[in-house]
Amino acid sequence: MSHSKQEIYEKVQSIMVELFELDPAKVTLEAKLGEDLGLDSIDAIDLITYLQEFVGRRLQPEDFKAVRTVGDVIDAAEATINQVPSPQP
Image (cartoon, rainbow, N blue to C red; front, side, top):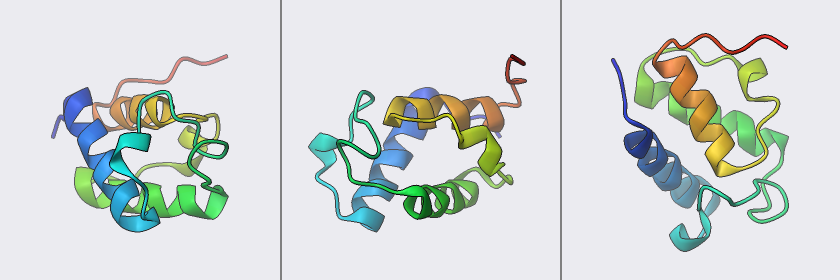
């Protein structure tokens, strides 16, 4: 099942608002997970768990290690969801 970037963003935003009681206006693509939103690594695992339910596919936490912003989360989720191979360094 394929999801658009906008659908993923809306889901990520709703999950973050519900789980972490964040103001939706603060959950922007540029928002830094730690600095701007106060999320830690445990929160990131929770976010991945909820995203898996949305996409119906297992997401690999290692694919999310480099994420720093909400936009990074969406890009990593989109790559996994749509089975786009990640570029290898």
